[in-house]
Length: 322
Image (cartoon, one colour):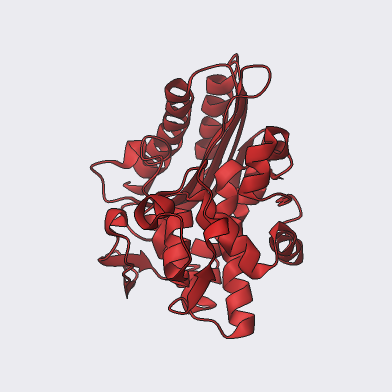
């Protein structure tokens, strides 16, 4: 008889009407007792199919998959790619670390000056509140940044913790030297070349998601748990990594990144990275797919991510159901 893991039940709510994440979410406990059913043939088949799929594409594609914290599949997984808004995930980890050290809770409010709410950037927060001085709960700023990829909220959080360099320093301390955070959203908006300086390898990002969802980082504080739950209900990129999971009991916490076109007319990056809980609730995998310098349009580039995710999910979900 299968011994299922008792889930941890979380009830979280923000004041963002459009986020629609005010309901119960069940995340499996961190565990080291997953089924040890990974086989060399699974890994070899996945690696072969992913390499075949990416060959000949007019874009740089990087993929990393970590299965139950053990087996790793990598295609260009050690190469640098621009993170774009995926970096709002490691930033959130830095925010949690800062708040734990300073005794700040997610319910505490942050003063936001009108000059921090920029007009010419993606910001559902600005669309709701307008450009004015206000105070917002930290949980709301995190929700805007993680769930709706709000650029103003992201930069306000950077100001709170001491800038991108503070987040970069924490990544180094945690052993994620390949995650490099150097510029704010405002700075990248002013100079798109800086998008390439905020970079990560797919493997490093997959490792960070594995650390949060499987290795126990989310149990370090209530805010870490809040971050994990918020990304389960990410509102962006549902046609990317989550695409093959529609209609299943699988669950994904993820963060997307989307870039503009560079001077060569190519999309700087279309990304998605996250952690997938397979339908049985006991097995899962972290996955990062970064696509840089794409000659395709946004829809076609997003479809590449969806097809990569489908290859991985179908192999592991079929194996998991045996």
